[in-house]
Amino acid sequence: MKQKIFALFLILCGLCLNLKAETQGDVVGRVLDDSGAPLAGATVQILHAKGGVTTDEDGYFRIPYSKDGAVRVKVSFVGYQTQTFVLKADERKGEQHVLRLQPDATALDQVVVTATRTPKALKDAPVVTRLITANDIKIADATNIQDLLTEQMPGLEFGYAMNQETSLNMNGFGGNAVLFLVDGERLAGETMDNVDYSRLNLDNVGRIEIVKGAASALYGANAVAGVINIISRENSEPWTANVNTRYNDFNKEWRHGGSFSFNAGKWNSQTSIQRTTSDEVQLTSPFDTESNILHIYGGETFNVKERLTYRFSDKVKLIGRGGYFNRISKRSNYDDHYMDYSA
Image (tube, rainbow, N blue to C red; front, side):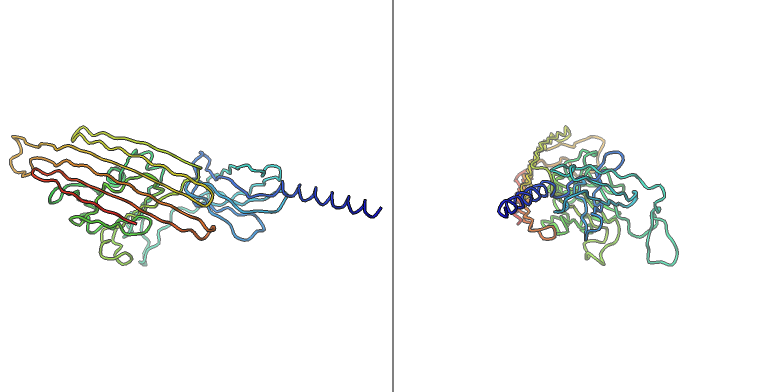
């Protein structure tokens, strides 16, 4: 009799463990606004639990959770109402939840903090910060940083310096006063005080942060006119692929590019390739007697970049980057070659 009771007890324990295993699992979802756009940086927290997580560039989040039963999740974001969502136990089995936030009509208006005793409007603040999101890049349909900044930033223009190298002018300052960063690291390979802007394609870019104004106190003498920081993104999809091409009839310029990424477990890889070719353009005109530039040189560039990430935990990850860049500028009597490796 005791053996039967003990056997029945083991069976009941097994059923309880099996039921618990079915109801346990991470809380996975995506945070969107009322129009369906993702909210990057939203805070997601399980009530009565320590800590929380923030959403990625596409609004996705994952919270490790091993208890059974319903889960109450609190989601907050600046400018939106803080809301609590109840996820029942039978709704959490391998399902990705979509949580939508509503704008907060009573939210505090834009606040500007300055080091002066008198209040200032944002347009009068000495340093203005501009954020260009991944959605802005898609709308602009630009494939390199030069096209994007020309369209998005008033008062910024690109021209030609000596030897027809591309030159930047921002707020009256040249390229030697504008600091370009990629994920917070300085971009090397300057020519005539300008980086080679054709190297900065926009594949796998999550956002671009622009400090338009003097920032030399934080970044050094190369940031007198401002700082442009290009932030890479990590795709959350299992794999993505993109192929693009552009043609400019002015100098018969062909720009071909492509990118590929995969996300498998703790590994995330992003690879991008871009090749550009252009012909020489004659500028002879009977009405232009002062200009000494009679033609614009042609050439070609080839750029390959790789970004590999291994995530040890939610707080620790290892990032490796490598790249190869080759540029040939076709002059009248010779070809100017430039080659660069980075790692």
